[in-house]
Image (cartoon, rainbow, N blue to C red; front, top):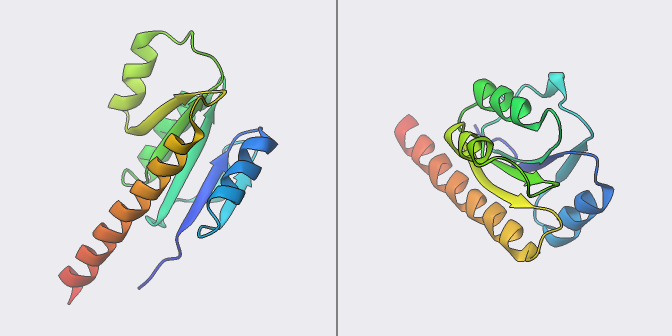
Length: 131
């Protein structure tokens, strides 16, 4: 069974959403201003870009509890986060954490495309295993 690939942006930055849409025409991008409880990440073929606000790290944990294999990329508004909070984010399963404004936006796009390649690889393995 093939599940459609999609990118989900969770955050309030409309410019960031527009940036993702314009730089990733190959991916449908969905936008949620806050964590959608109905999201139900049963679809492993998703990538999540999460704008870290006050509840961002809690949302990361919730996403990973729902589906540990979904890649989650964090965007932080400020660079005064304690190192323990940053290291916990990686321990909890974040792919990458970038600080806004992005000094090099290509890093974000490259990371998303790398996640797509890995999801393609895992999808092929799942299909081979099922046969």
